[in-house]
Image (tube, rainbow, N blue to C red; front, side):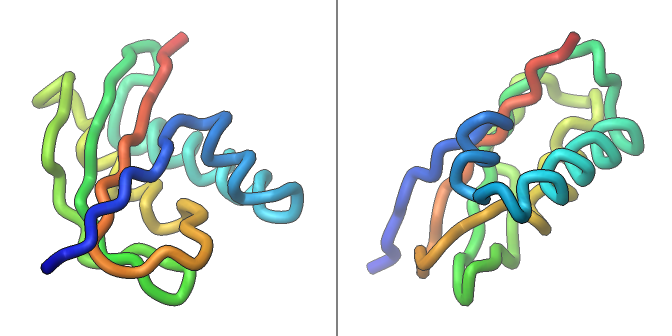
Length: 101
C-alpha cells in the first residue's frame, strides 16, 4: 500500500523545513521557476504527487491546479526539484502555493 503523506506547501512553511542554509536556494528557485513558467502577479495552488527518497522528490505529477493553463503546474514541478523533504519516504502529496503579488 502506498504511504501518503501530506507535506505542507507554501513558501514560508517550506523555507522553515529547509533550514537557514538552504532557504536561499529554495527562494531563488521559486523565483526563477515562476519567472520562467507563470505570471508572478497571479496566485495559484498546485498539488503534486511525488516519490520521496533520500531527502529528494522524484517522479512528480500534477494532481490538481487551481489556475489551469497559466503555467503554475510547470512552475510547481520546477520548484519540486529543491523542495525540502527531510526523511520522508514513499509516495507523498505536496501542496505548492503561489501567493501572487
